[in-house]
Length: 111
Image 1 (cartoon, helix red, strand yellow):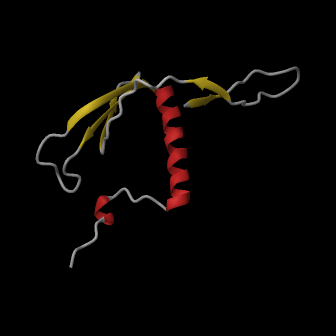
Image 2 (cartoon, rainbow, N blue to C red):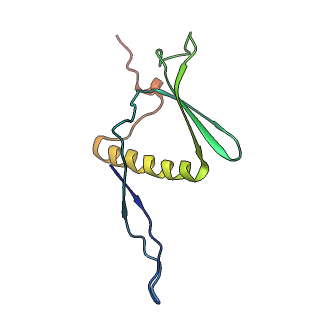
Image 3 (cartoon, rainbow, N blue to C red):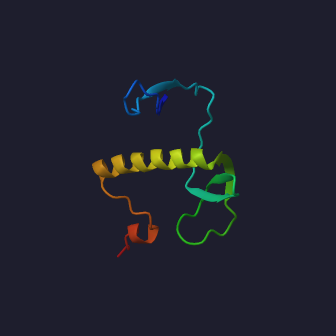
């Protein structure tokens, strides 16, 4: 996996050019878990994103949602994450259609 980073060095008389740079990432020990719930909170310095599994995605859950992962990041990283997620969702919607996030609109009434 790689991430692109902008290089803003300039040559004589040239404007800054954004050049992709490959960054090596080691993710063999990464732990993957599924989440269908997230909560975003934070402070003036950091953003806190909690992920969990909501066993009852329709209606109000009867039991508390258990948070399994908490990611704490600064707002610069959060903004880069926002851009990356937005780009990924736009690509997905271009191929598969617009995603409806309101579950009530996605439910089909059984007759």
